[in-house]
Image (cartoon, rainbow, N blue to C red; front, side, top):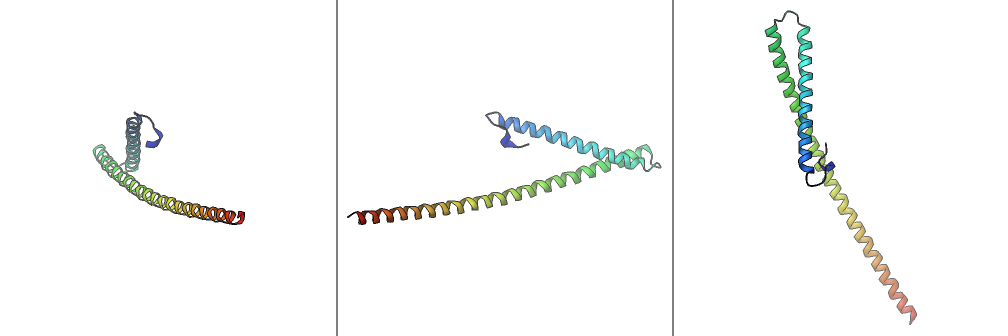
Length: 124
């Protein structure tokens, strides 16, 4: 969800609330998926007691959530680096474009001044 998508005085608060709700729902989905994977794993091990299966499930879910969290943090970090690279490149392009426009404007003014001077000299 993008923070820029919400406008107005309450846009930031609504955006934060929506982002928190989305994060909660995503975390819940990851947790449920990890639990289903753990239960599937335990089902393939019929020799486990109920307590052992429950313990294995708990450990598996804990490890899987930790791995998912680390993966998401890595993605966020990479996205931040990419964003900074793109912003730097954009600033460079804007600066180059401004220099080119300034140079063209100077050239046009110089030409206009030359033509004006030539017109004045020829009209005498």
